[in-house]
Length: 124
Image (cartoon, rainbow, N blue to C red; front, side, top):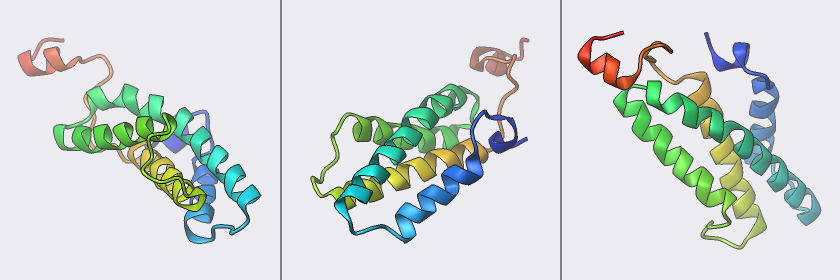
């Protein structure tokens, strides 16, 4: 089951807003600032959800998720390499969209009741 069916947020709306920011960005600074705040809000909401899912992901997907989460942290801590508002908005939109994508398609997951130690030893 995908996260969009089980999570308490509207994945379709987040996806649409990310696409608006990435493919039809406004040139007006006030709209860019509003969009940046919105994208940062999505990152704040989605990053912890992905972080909780990472231990259940397969190794390759875990690596991808960790990179996206690292970028999420840098974005929210203001460690972006650019002071340009349009660039920051684009980076936030890319990050929010990546988080959403990994939440919707995390790959094969270990069962909730099984910890990584139990998976490696075969114990439940």
